[in-house]
Image 1 (spheres, rainbow, N blue to C red):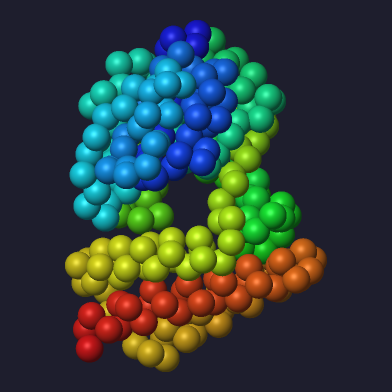
Image 2 (image 1 turned 90 degrees about the horizontal axis):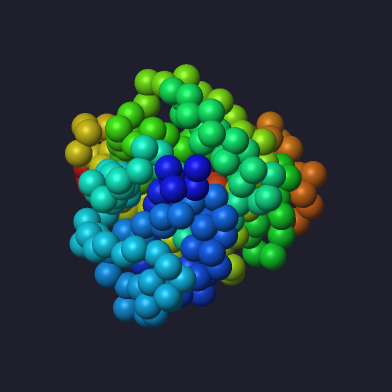
Amino acid sequence: MKNNLTVVILTKNEEKTIQKVVVNAQKCADKVLIVDSGSTDKTVEFAESAGAKVVYRAWDNDFSAQRNFALQHVKTPWVLYLDADEFLDDTLIDSIKAALVKNEDKQYSMLRRIHAFGFEYKHGIFKPDEVIRMFKTDSVHWENKVHERPVCSMPKECLKGFIEHYTYENWQDWWEKAGRYTSIWAEDTYNNGKKTSVGSAFFHAFYGFIRAYLFEAGFIDGWSGLYSSLQHFIYTLIKYLKLYEKYK
């Protein structure tokens, strides 16, 4: 049933991981589709050499638009979305294959483990989370420019196994992504008519830290839990201050 599934991956300068990600995805799908937004490294070359098909869409600060664009090029009845730094473990691969054989009218979620700064998180803001990633191709579309989410009316089932997400390698990597994502969020939120204040920005950031460090038990992860909670404070503060700046 591998030929019933296309794995979609969005890329922009992902030469470090893209070959391994494509090869991993091919364990459950014959077709891997790359939506590249203008890589200047060897991402496209490496993806094609691994057997993926590559299409191009210019980046316009809209992750949902990239994901929805991919659907135009998916010819299989099922689609699975992965990031360019995510890998399926063996249990999840078997679960995906079993779901394809059943071919039920469902959408499928998966648990995702976060690996960042050389550490596997078990608590806090980076604790394992549930993400919905596999759909019948004609049943889904995406919304929100950043922190995008799928819209699908079919009942949800969580598959066994994990996505292993190898995100931020270092602080500079986190800082650059945080800068891009907060700017997109602020622009989108501003265009949707939402307002904020400096006080509200600090309140959201402080609450985010408390939630990550205490309520979600980030403190159990030691120093890694502390600085991931501080990162969440900074990220939240920046995105709300950027929103405030637009109104100011």
